[in-house]
Image (cartoon, rainbow, N blue to C red; front, side, top):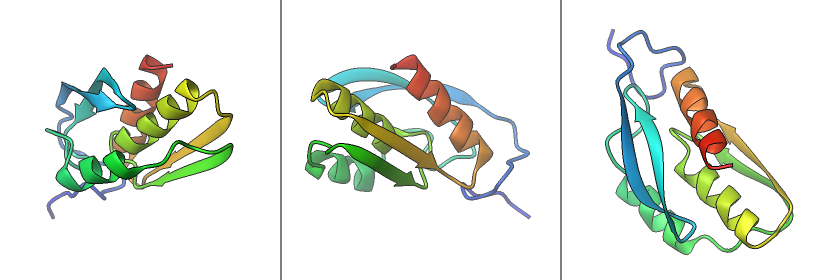
Length: 109
């Protein structure tokens, strides 16, 4: 059976790469990994969504199906810039997605 980005624990080799993209109005470099959603680029749907997100308000933000974390990272960086107190929840069924999002979040404070 082949694996998908929604496989809980991918068994295929994890191939990482770095992408440089604009998140929250700044250029950031993130790590992506095979076996997750859109590991080679920021997908068009996410890019459109990020262009239309409002500045976060205080409270909790949920990124359900976080992949390698572009939405969670954008929300956290935007909140930090706006000095808004938020807690970002990045959830995914895929263990690689969670690990990669955590690495990217740590990398960007």
